[in-house]
Amino acid sequence: LDLINPKKAGKKRYKNSGTLTIAAFSILKMPSFFHYVYSGCRLNFSVAIDFTASNGDPSHPSSLHHYDPAQPNQYVQALMAVGHVLNAYDSDHLYPAL
Image 1 (tube, rainbow, N blue to C red):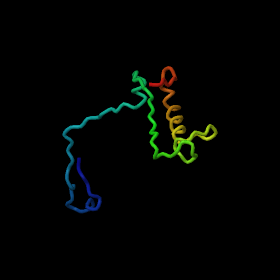
Image 2 (image 1 turned 180 degrees about the vertical axis):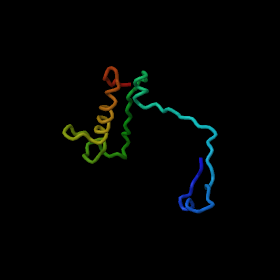
Image 3 (image 1 turned 90 degrees about the vertical axis):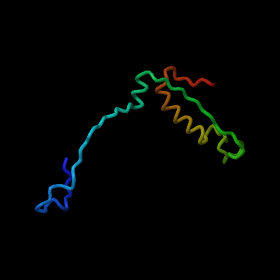
Image 4 (image 1 turned 120 degrees about the vertical axis):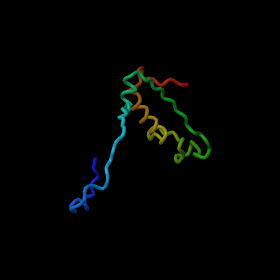
């Protein structure tokens, strides 16, 4: 495969700037998430929450662990979002406690 420099292509004696020879190549087929699930891969959903004091007093609204049924905290929102997506790939749609 000739490598052509567009700036030199118009010159009289210009042939190419070199050649590219491909000695070997391979195409790797990368499976998608769908392929893993369709092939029978089982998913388990586990959760861990850091309850260290540095996250603040859970009774204070500014704490990451504050629980308000009317306004879910960031942990609850994240768990619900991830759980909602993964639920579609779970055979029994349950989240057993470990």
